[in-house]
Structure formats: C-alpha cells, structure tokens
Length: 421
Image (cartoon, rainbow, N blue to C red):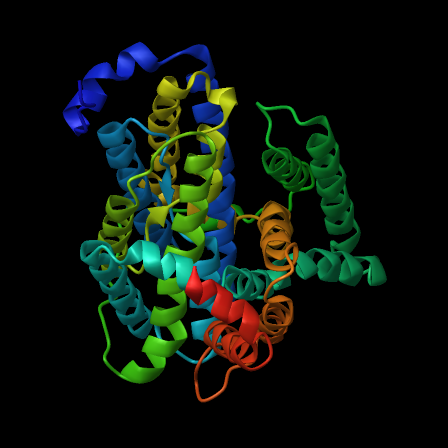
C-alpha cells in the first residue's frame, strides 16, 4: 500500500510516534534554535536597526521557518526542520554595509524567494544544485561569518588591555567564564545542555550578579507583532546582485542541499522539489516583515534526523516538537529582544560567536576538505572575509563571482567535471 503523504495523516499518526527520545531530542534541538536567535539579534545590532525592526526580523524568520518545518514533517513524516539561513543573514549585513536600506533589502529578499519558488516549480532544482561549486559557496559562507568568531578575541583583548577602565574587568571575567563553560560542555557533550546555552546562562548570571543590566530597557514591556518595512525599487540592479543572487544560491546550494544530504544519509527519500517550493514561498512571506528568508534548516534537520530521536519512523515527531518549541521565539520576539537589550551587547556578540563556531568550522571543512575548487574556494573566502564592497555591491556576491571566475580560468578541469556529471 502506497504511503499517504498528507498533513492530516501525519497529524493523526503523530501521537503514536511521540516517545521519550523524540520529546527529548525535539526540545534539545529547540533549545539550540533559541540560541540561534542571538545571531539575528547580533546581526540587527551590527546593522544599527532599532529593537522593533530586529523583533520583526526574528518574528518573521522563526515564525515562517517553523510553519515550513511543521508542514513538511507532517506531510511527509520525515524530520525536515525549518528555520532560516544563517549565512543569508550575513548577506543581509553585507548589504547594509554596502549602503542598502531595509526596504531595498526586503525587495532583494522578495526576489530571492520568487527565484527559489520558480526553480522549485520548474523541477530543474536538482540540476542547479548539482552544478553549483559547493566549495566556493561554503568558502564565501565562512568568510561572511568569520568576523563573529574573531570578535570573541577582539572584545576579550580590548577588555584585558583596559581592565582598570569602567566595568572592563568584570566584563572580561564574564566573557572568559562563558568561553570556559562553553568549552567544558562541548567536551562533555551533555545532550540536554547545548554548550551555547550554558555560555548564555553564565553571561546572564554574571550580568545579573554584577548589576550590568539596564532595567530601563524593560519599561513599558509589552507584546507586539511584526512590522512591515515596505519595498523599494531604488538601485534594483545592485540589490539583485548584492542580495538576491547570493541569498538564492545559499538557500538552494547550502541550506536545502545540506538538509537533503542529511536525510539521504539517514535513509530517507526527501521531497526536494516541495522543499524548494516551500522555501521560496517562505522567503516571499518573510520579506513582507523584514525577514531575509525561511527555508529548510540543515543543522536542525541533522539533529532531529539523528538516531538520538529514536527509530526512523518516529523522528518526524521530534521535528514537530522542535518546531513548536522554537516557535516561542517568534511569538515572544518583542519580549526576547528588549530583554537582550538590557545586556552588554558585546557579551551577546561573544555568545553569538560561540554559537557560530560550529557553522564556520563546517563551512571551512566543506570548502577545503576535498581536492577540487581549492583555490577558487579560498579566493571566495578571502573576498568575503575582507567585507569590502564595490559599486555598492556587497562582498557576498563578489566572493561568489570572483571565486567562480577563478575556477573557470584556473580550475577548469574541476568545473568541466562538475558540468559533465
């Protein structure tokens, strides 16, 4: 008898697949997802955006991402988690650094969503994924994210060289304690306590203990929904190449591809076309509220699809539980952001940097662990790492463009072999 693929069927059968393992793994993955909210907060501050804009960004990305994950998990009874592109958020920051306004960014997000949707509907997505030189894409990704890792060293060094100034000695102590605790929990590998969560608890405890929080930021605290920044057609060409192209490539070539690989590795037959269509629609909807996209989450899919979630047929329940738990970040974003605003922002950057180390390391490994596209991937990494914009076009695009150009000129055999496959 053919397997029924419908949300109603998945929902009806869900209670029978809820076990201690699916609940535990779903919540643990959700806690890790909460930690990722720090990245959007840090990115929003890097862009100089007000709290309501950052709130809307978190609301849109996490809200639509969780809806995507719940829909796909129930429909196909597979552990397909939804979220947003971490690397895509870095592309957004690079656009701001290039002088783009939020309405211009939203236009870029919308166009990226449309491209991803059309690629999904056309059915050619599998070919496009195959022809993308992934080492170049991942080299660009690592370069865009690298600053958040080096910020850990930067802030600790600044505080250590000026310990007698203001609260620097206390900030240094809290930061070092957070790094040590993160390292300890990374070593211990306690499933119920992600290292980043442990580091965040240390930061919050230290801030509260030494009175470094600004309680005035919580005055008049109340729930609020997302905002609508609107769209702008100004500089459409620059927006397209700075935001739309790299974001589209990341959604297709990095985020969704990683999830597909994980699922295939666990013995599933993932619905690539539907995953792409859903990611395109998600990107279009989030753009209305200032969100850069909502696609399939590679790392969270990997966590819920792992054997730690129980038997293969039960694992989709872990994804549903994870998505429901993580959706609380979206629902209460207007409270999460003001709370984060009470904390010293550089401590938040350090926790965000710690949470990105695994992603950066994975991107570097994907870029340089093989023998193909090594020079072009390195060039893409360096260009993205520079953070330099040309002609109001952000470094993410130039990293992909120059990296691919180097591959075409120097690593022609690698490119030809990729095309021949």
